[in-house]
Image 1 (cartoon, one colour):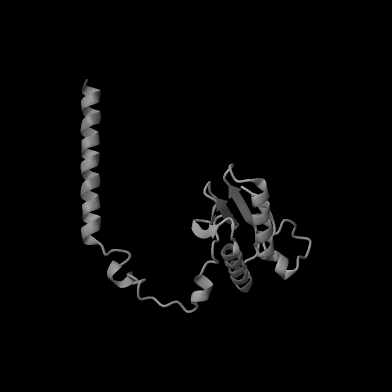
Image 2 (spheres, helix red, strand yellow):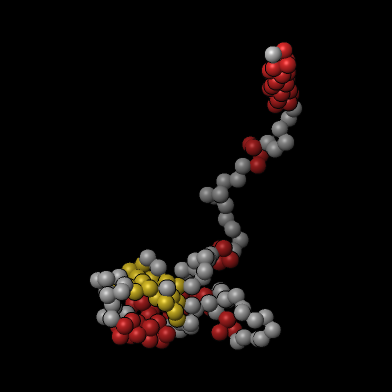
Length: 159
């Protein structure tokens, strides 16, 4: 019982010394970093070249584009509505715009083999994945794939 009382007393004394030492250090010493000096107002900061900081459109973690078709035959590029499955002209023009921007920014895909040189145009990330509702006929999906390939997508796959 005496050992337990000594251990509890020692713990209380050690805790008290720690709190006292911490308080003395915080009040008697200067802070290592003065927050008033090093605060940066990011809202007013102008970057030298904003184009470097912009991310290519629709660049997600896997860098491929996702085209989705729901049960009502509505087409989406990521979450952006692109119209219906019967008229995919807007989707096609949007994909062409994205690929042009990616080409201008040299947004290249990760090479599968480093020992083979690949032409610049083929290096640009143009992967498109299509996810369609099971109720959509396969023939309509083939028309969508053809339109996506006409826009310059390569490769085209299913998600």
